[in-house]
Every structure is written in structure tokens, then in C-alpha cells.
Image (cartoon, rainbow, N blue to C red; front, side, top):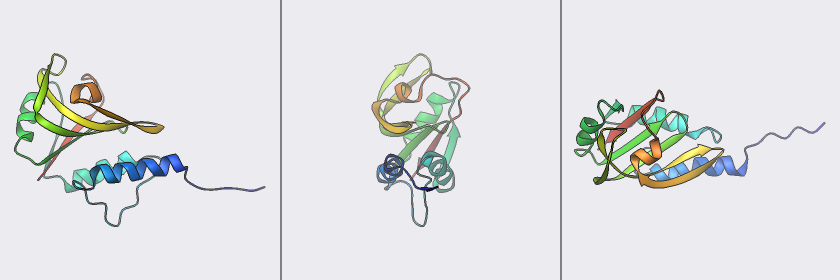
Length: 139
């Protein structure tokens, strides 16, 4: 019986894609990402490296996004499957679901392979529900 242990090229590609996407925000020195679940480790790293963070909710979205304008970088995680980098806090669209003007962003949703999305934040992270959404701010 031959046992082959390895990481799929696609999974390894996901980890490398995310490292490249966040290289100027998060330090990946001496870190190995789990190729199948890279977002979990990246979220853990963001919690250590960020200047501050907030659990994003409908009740605090407007205030938190206003606070984000004082920082250089803003990253939002939804659960363990979505990461968004806010690209323009001033270019936003009013969201009834969030009760805030939601900024432009780009990110990835992991459904097996990473699926890239470029849209307003609310269209990437979804509507407020019981999923945990965490916004990290970096200078």
C-alpha cells in the first residue's frame, strides 16, 4: 500500500496568495501557514500585530469605520472563511443592513479555493448575523 502525504497545489497556492495579499500589513516571518486553513493563522497573527481591533456589529459599524480612518490599514475577517482589506474608506455606499456607509474593499472567500472579491465591504462580509466579524486596524 502506497501512502502519499502532501498538500494540494491549490491549497498551497491559497496560502501564498494570502501572504502576498497582506505582505505589507502582516509580518509572515518565521510563520508557516496551514495551506488548507490559512485564514485561521492569519487572523491569529492579525490579533497580535494590529494596533487595535473591534468585533464589528450593526450597532457599532458606523463608529468603528469612522475610527478606521485614523489608521493606515484595515482588515476584516468573517468567521474562518472570509478576509477583506479595505481599500478606500472614503468611497462608500450606504448599507441599510449595517446602518453605515460601507467602504470599498478587496478580499478572498475560501470555499475550497480562494475566490477573490472586489466590492463594497457589506457585499463581501454579508449581512449582520451570528457570524463573528472582526476588524483589525494597523498603522
